[in-house]
Length: 390
Image (cartoon, rainbow, N blue to C red; front, side, top):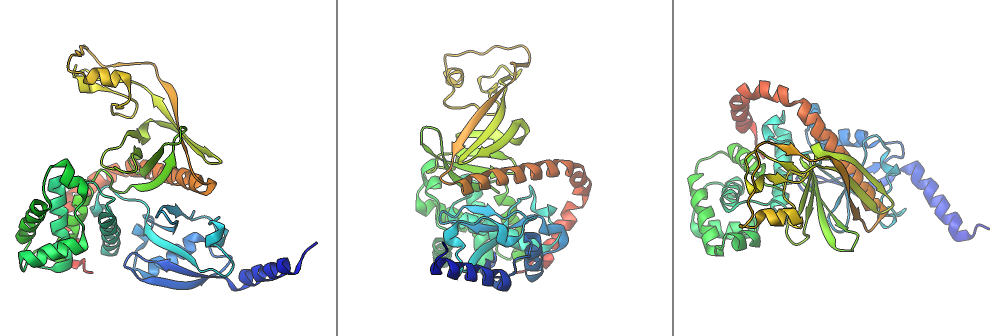
């Protein structure tokens, strides 16, 4: 028997289907695009509307996506071939009278910013990368950090005025990561001094050039372009999974400076999920390089696993390795499983991994075209730098 409360909900549902859903799209420049999403509107159609609003050109639109961001700031990307309101967003975020909030962000990070065709896309890439830097999602060596921080100051503050002003701006804009201080046994004052010295050298550098320098330094980060998600292993231990166009990375949640395991796309056999379990099938081939060096014994990911017994033995200073040629053991498939808090998150990780793996394949097919354009890279750099303004 249908009660009065159920009838009210059904009427509200029908009204929503007729009038659409009130929505807010968060843009990378901090603006918000408010609109009513009609039931028949597809994600790719909404992306076209947003692209027009932020002046994205057709050639660069494919690198951007629309995502629902949860309370842990995990990005759940909406599939472009589905209707927006059909996407299974968690119920608490998709109540009848609640405003649907989505984020327009960079989904696919190119290997080089000079791959992008138009300055509008480079500007958005910069805003996305700057946001990641401020959140501490980019890992750098000390020298790379000094360089990117000094470029950041030049972009937002202009030419150097004084040490005091530069130090205050550095504190306000980009907090210095503790990882740099601990890894290089250096004080906060020394980091600030090194950044400011490089900042002084940028006096007179145009903003457009500083932006390109910033992005090219960011591309050297080991976590550049990674989308991070929180998972657990079978024993219940928490891990952070990072997914990029280079592969899938497993990190300690408290330290993303060095991955515990790396799953390169070229060695993955399959990706699948069921309920809350996400699985990675990897060809488990141990390779011994012909160098005869202890560090030349690699696992299927191309790296020594610090928990692997053979890896520990190889790293021991008393161990000697002698090989005369490259040998490869028989290949088997090894399954690595991760568990998510919800089915929704598990499906997101799987679909994101599938999309980025396809992007990796697409980038490989474009390698020859990029090599062809390489002769014009300098001219493209200069032309973009001249017209790139914020």
